Length: 82
Image (cartoon, rainbow, N blue to C red; front, side, top):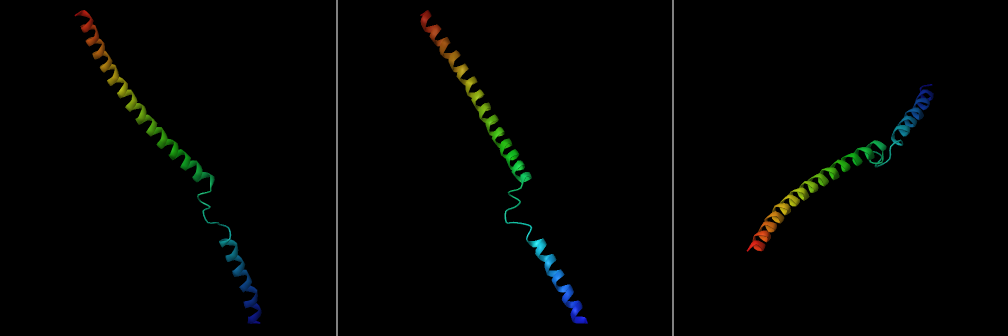
């Protein structure tokens, strides 16, 4: 009688463990939709910051070139007067 009870319980325990371990695949977190969206958002934010820094640098260069152009125009007008 004890052997019948032991035989009935053994398959249930192994069946439960198989169900829980087979549900996940390797790399399933990296393939999830939420992870992709977050990664895309972080990447977009990084690119935006890089573009803003580049534009700031270009604007500073433009201002320097304007000052240089004004200086050259002044020198040119002084040379024409002589």
